[in-house]
Length: 166
Image (cartoon, rainbow, N blue to C red; front, side, top):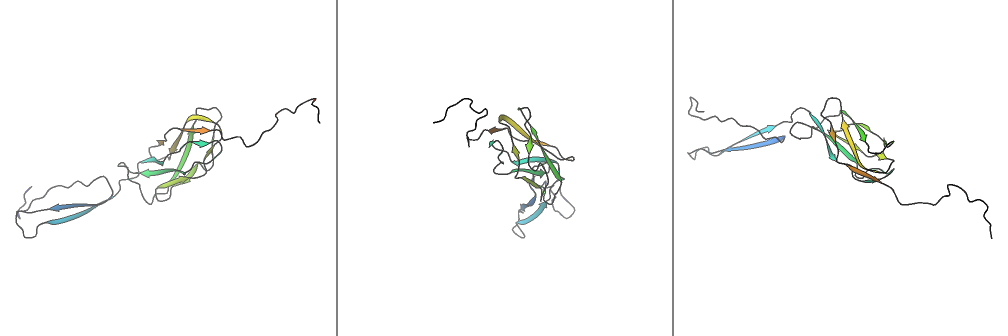
């Protein structure tokens, strides 16, 4: 749109990523051309949780490696720095009696909660984690399996009766 000073104004929509957005304007005359404008986009309000390090397959009773991470994001998927809301994980289990053990609730640090002590004690396939915090859209992890470990010892459940020695 032309203005009274024979200039043109064009609306600029910043990208979805927080940080600097640079625009270069060129005029038909060489004087003062090009002109570079920099605008800084800021994060949208905290909106949702996302698993940014999903759980992988584990051995029953062992911790996830690397640690499961959940990030507070805006509606564009940007991490929201400086956020320290509490995030809680729950287990969706295909196996009766399976529970999630370890520290299941943490305050995010700079928008990220890292759960390093989580374990599941029952063997099965198709487990899911759900991350929730009262004010955000929750997220569900990719499916993972809990496998049995290798045998560490042999034990008699019932002792032998009437056996001879020697």
